[in-house]
Image (cartoon, rainbow, N blue to C red; front, side, top):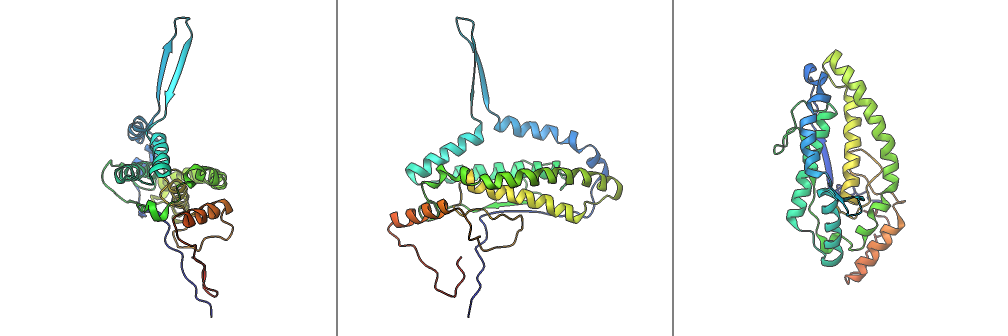
Length: 254
């Protein structure tokens, strides 16, 4: 007898409420209306650039990473050397992700509410706070961005398709007042996929390799997950004094 078990829910989740009707006027001028809030986000996360002129007359430009890249590198170092993920760092990264997702949902015509810096509105984004000691391997942050390359390639194509879908939806809303449900679900699914990759490779909140899926449903991880991830996780488990557990025969592996 084989017992089927569901894999735990992925620690990064995104749901956007579907609206039956959309405002045609707001949709018509959406690309202009989104500019002010997009500028605010850009100022918040942009890199700092400095220009200096040497005595010889040579112009030297230097730049420092923005807040998002700085937070990423700081988190890598904290997990690597201190095995900690400060809660306030996590909370800030979570709220920044929520803010940027609200802007993206507004720009993609998924919601009509102007993006708020505080309120959740119809965009529900949740990320689980990690238990660094038990759930995260200290070495994986060094290679997660590399292991996620297959996702980047797939998402580059899907993002282009999502952009075309938004353009088609723009015309659909202007003529019918509604966002076709299939198109809506596709665009949200691409955003959900991006969030999972971001949570794994850059926010570093989980060691679970993201599924190649935009579905919200729980799925068992693919047997083809990167072997390097599995090896490093197993090494980290043994280094902490715990033997890796084997699933009993007849039971689906989590």
